Length: 466
Image (cartoon, rainbow, N blue to C red):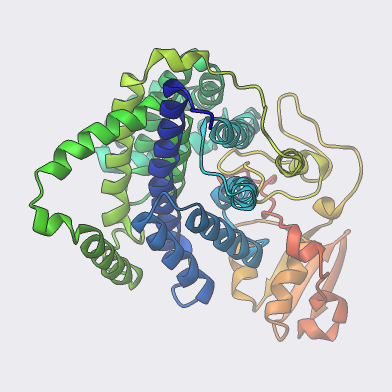
């Protein structure tokens, strides 16, 4: 029998501990999304919620992690195409986790330094591509106009929590905001990629996202908690050992009679707390679950900062070469790259990490500084101006001076075929007392309408759109 060296055993134990702690944060990130965004009565929501609670109860379980990943993937596919950008990050990381977990279960292996390194590299690639795409999308002409920039709008929401209002802040700050936001978002993925600056990047990530998401009027808390979970995975293994040492000290202070049942008590309390919150308790300023998610993000954020500052410099020698990745990991990375390139290719504009960027790529044009639109005509460019309608969603767009693509007009009218509609397409006026008078108006493509989603076009009067 070959005895494993002590240093190797330590690395294996450290790796297993690291993924165990990450699993807790990963489950919390999914719960945060469910509390903020999902329909409370959908069975897939409850399946994912239950799988997260079970993972928190036993975070070392490979099978339970795989179940969380699979549940989120199924929910994501069900929600397509109308889903949030952070759900794409969750989907791609969960798909990579599922590939790795399936391999471990088939081989009957546990977590070790080799396979955890592979999933950390994969998660880093997904985060850098996604976050980098969101940062690069902001390098457009409109984002740097203070009167129209999403940076100013986001700061206005976040500033309410800190008492910052235009009346008390100099105009210079608002003029500088687009440059501050764009440079910070560009800097974070670069700092995370470089091993020696990863801890600094983590600290900046935490501070920046706490500032833009903590206000009750902000809607990015679930995205913030998700980023924190991934950032923890990227920290050195020694951070989990530091955390475990503090946990053991606190755990030793708990009476033994209570310690034996603490897991059951914790899960029971967590379950009832989640039920209460899902039923809209803890709502502030229309932001569902804020009273739980805000302190949760602060707690995880401060913990991340402390751990990043204390991280072991020896881990900086760790290679980030994509060794250990399976062919499905590379396929997923290719799909992610295709997704973030979609706006510039004229394919889709939502779910591509261009949120709050002022990017506009309609009419075969691009307002980006250096990324042009591909020169072909596509669904992206078949725009419709709504003249009058009884459809409530389309009427909101009409009042705001927004155009929609023919693709999205059909999606809206298919939901409400008895709506009256009058619109201009290709310079010609069309009027229908009922949309179903024209079967083409309510006919959905089984693939394109499932995968392709367009934001309203605001090129006439640019504004901040999510």
